[in-house]
Image 1: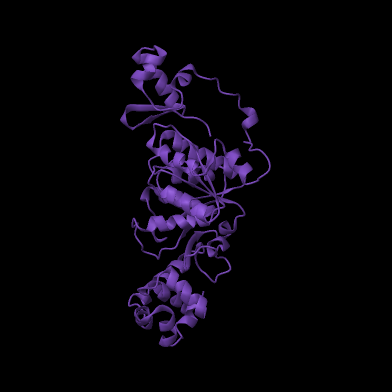
Image 2: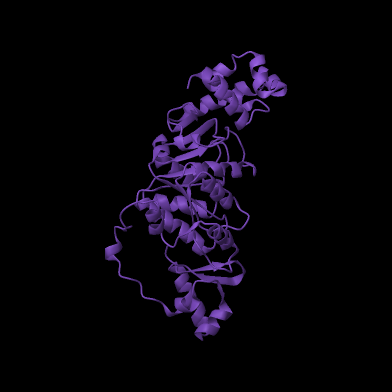
Length: 365
């Protein structure tokens, strides 16, 4: 993008009173921002009113610094990109939205944005051990089937989904709520670097934008917009994951939800989605069949693994959270023996510990 064109896009973004709807109205009427700013004030006034017209006449005072900052960032790495609505690399799916980002900042591989099949995996920042395992296992299985996993780089389900996709050498896209010169949470800095190496990190927020709470719900519409479907792994009744699912449904995309324990608050959002018509899924194969991908999932080493024996202690636990005393009543084991066996199962990844002293069996997705 030429410097004057880049400056015009940033000026439009930074002008007070010009949000996505007003900007889209100006773009539809006049064309590119360079053309918009050559129009007489009377032409603007007829379209957006006197107050916005006055703002459009005066370039924002921080515009030169913003342009320089973006140019420096673009020059710092061939993996840094900025796409305008007019760029041929801009994802066509986002153009169908009522309020697509005027500029899309991308770190990584632009080819990831053209992947033929993308699925969002979202959920709680504080999942149960089973929810964390489900996110990783579903993403890994879907990645092996050629699906690009889209998520939000957050703690919990998002991070597990990205990790699962990377474990299968699949492409994954992270849509974030900050400027791309920041990583949030900071603990995911190494994960972000791995995502960008083969996939992409995407943001609509200008460089330097901190992790403001109001940015993340808006970020969710891009996660939904980039994906042919959205899988909710675990979610509370009032959560950003349900916002993403609602936005996906409004855009005519598939919504999937994994059911969970009736006792877990993290399952209530998924159960609410299922009642509203989301498709209940128990395996990654369910999603592939719904998206009409042929062929069963197959792990390269699946034929070499003997089936694991069913453990009587795991049978006694069931799949709902359970306390130690209740498990002791079911099994009749003494405390020392039970604790030792639970530790062994925990180290194997078959049992997880929940807050408040609860235990839960971890199933395989």
